[in-house]
Amino acid sequence: MILFYQKIKKGAISMTEHTDLNTFFDKLKEGLPEQKDPSLEGLESALNKMQLNGDKKIGIEFECGDCCKKVINGAKLFFIFNFAVLLPEPGDCLFLKVISGGKIADRETMKKIIIPANRICSIEIDPEQEDS
Image 1 (cartoon, helix red, strand yellow):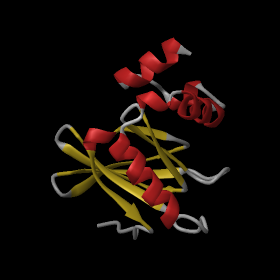
Image 2 (spheres, helix red, strand yellow):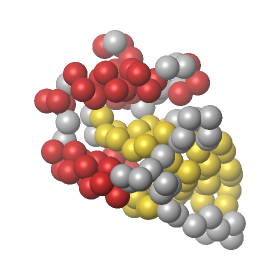
Image 3 (spheres, rainbow, N blue to C red):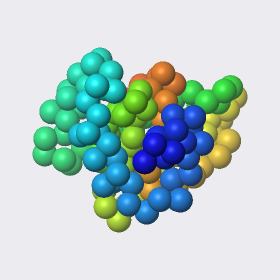
């Protein structure tokens, strides 16, 4: 488990390598409360209250070098070790757009994403999809 944590901390994890990350993250999240950032816990708590009925989707806009990335269609967001973990509904996927120079440069789909919390620009509830 320590090796896995080091890979996450360095940002070198490939989400396709591990099939049951939900269980792993839940155990990690519960087992190490001293590793949580109190301000991120407050944000997580507020987001969970906004999601009580579970019908709202979550989007995150974050920076990556000279590009801006936006991931949408999230259903569950939590923070571990100053990383945001966004998951879609079971059986669904996340949609990511890479924006460079004001235009969409790339699109991807994924099952999970881990984003360094210090790279997050905004967290959106029920974001609108625009293709411009």
